[in-house]
Length: 249
Image (cartoon, rainbow, N blue to C red):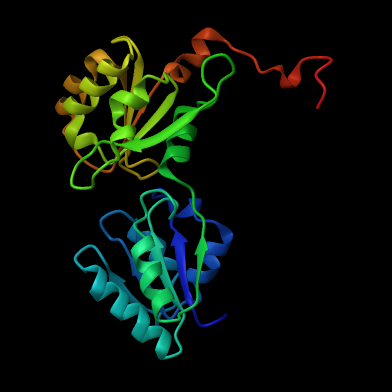
C-alpha cells in the first residue's frame, strides 16, 4: 500500500456499512485517527495490533495534521476516519489544504452517509415521482455560518425533500424557519438519532409536533432531521413511469 493519507468515510455507525475498500485500508494502516465523538470505535477493531490509534475529538486541526504529517514522513500509511461520507460536513477541506501545502499525497474513500442509512431504516425513497425529485442537504446556522441565500426559510420554499444535519439542538428555530418558508404544519417530519447504531432512535411526527417530541426525547446531537412529502409516499402510492409498459429506457 502506498505511503499516503486516506480520508475514509467510516459510514453512519454500523461497522458492517463500511465499504470493502475502507475496511481493507483500515486493516493495513499504520496510523488511524478517528473522530471518536461521531465514529463508532468498533470500526477500529479491523486495525492491526501494532497500529497507532488516535482519537481526534479533543485535538485541534494543528495537532491532528501534525500527527498525520509526522507519520507520513516516517513512511507510515495513515487512515483518517470521518463519519458518514467525507464530502458532507466532513471538515476535510482544511486538512487537505495542509497536506497539499506540504506536498503529501492523499486519497478520499467515499462512505455511506447517515442520510442514506436513515432512508434505509425508514424504508423510504427520497425522490418519489410527483412528490419530490430534489433533495436538499443543509444545516441550521450555528457556530458555522450559512450563506444568506441558503437559510432554511429560503430553502423551504422549494417544498422538496429536506435533510437537515447538525441542527437538533436548535429544533425550535429549525421548525420556525421551515414553517415561515411555506411548509404546512402537518408536513411529515422524522428525526433519526444515531442511524444504524445499536441505540438508534426514530421519531416520526409532523412539523407541528416536532419541537415537543424532540425535547421530550432529549435528543440534541448526532441526529438527522428529515422533512417533506416523500415521507408520505406509502400512503399516496405514487408509481415511477420507469416500469410502465412502453416506457423507453
